[in-house]
Amino acid sequence: MDLIRFGCWEAAKLVAVIAVSAYAARTVARWAPGGQTLKFALYVIIGALVGLSGWYVEGDVAAEIENSHAQQALARGDLDAAYTGALAAVKRRSHQVRYWRCLIATKIALRQTQSVLDDEPAVRALSHGELAEEDEYQFALAAYLLGNYDQVVAATLRMIRRDPSYAPPYVLQGRAYTAEKRYPEAQQSYLGVLQIYPTNQEAVEGLAHAYYLNGDRQQATAVLDGTVKFSFSAAARQRFEALKGLYEQ
Image (cartoon, rainbow, N blue to C red; front, side, top):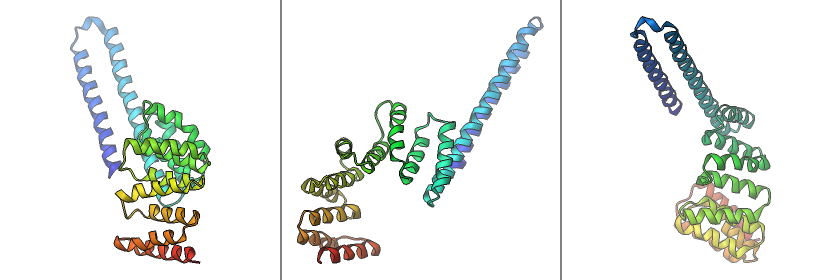
């Protein structure tokens, strides 16, 4: 449906250009007959503008279709098709941040993490230096996958200060602290998100794991036992029980 709306919007823009051009052509036709050379030149300019508009609209529509197909391919796990489509969309319309987002998400899925960080200057420039939450998170995730934990912590702290209700940075920060064996800091990160979203499964598992790695098996089990007060899916419950079995060994 979004693709249909986009196509209708682009068609409406092209129709508007054609209508304005037709009006301009009629205006030129009413001029006194003495300026035929000038009239011809104006007709050429009007025709060129219509042709250029059609070419540009065609490129917009093609980029949107390629990006839509890439998102669908990414959702079903066809990473090769997703990468091909996302890259094609970016090449067509590199000034559109939303096309970069699909490409970056695909690169992360393909573990092309350094390439993701190489794209950051381009996305930051398009965002006038202030990255959107989802973009900054993706770059922080790439840094985490590369083991640049200090960079991750700095980015997640910025995101949390900007929007304390945005859950993903807390979890990613907890993972970075855990990787650095800074377990108390990891616990605080996970507790921070659980205070807002007590049914965040990643935070529950991360908190229990941080306690376990810090040698506190009892508290790790207590975190999982505490989930009975909240609504989790059957799959999450099975996961919690499996972790409890591991921590109680």
